[in-house]
Length: 177
Image (tube, rainbow, N blue to C red; front, side, top):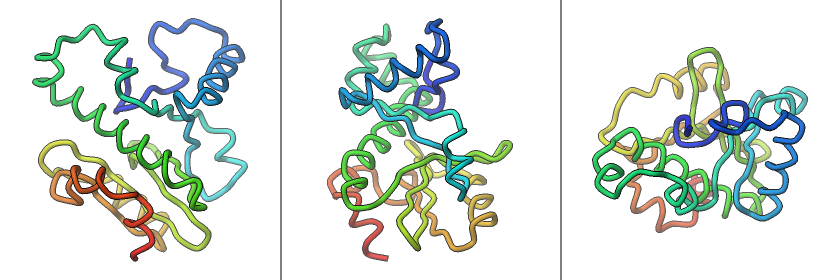
């Protein structure tokens, strides 16, 4: 089952392999450029490595191919759309940012979370993805309180328009600040 737009390694619905074997599968899929496992941002490399990865599929077609949803169900389910948009944003970031020296993570602390954290030496951004109308972003406020040097970026929902975000190489959104 997809959780908030991505598959969490520990909650991979229907996937009953032992944790070590599951990690092997994830590594094989990463090597095949089918998915990436994002580490949690903590500001500490040790804590990042110990976190459960947030998995982002590099192509939403893989999700749709395995889904039993009809086209109409996909189009009318706002939650599903939100998950797909978040995954697509993550894939767009992962495809373009690491070669430019950026790292992509996620962040969660208690109930507060941000969809993506983009880091580069001396720079830090928290990203929240909204697929519909703008809404509350308590995770951004919590992240900025914990990491005051960070910048916030809302993608979709009154922030950067989704269509413009996908048409633009993501480095532009971060290099221009």
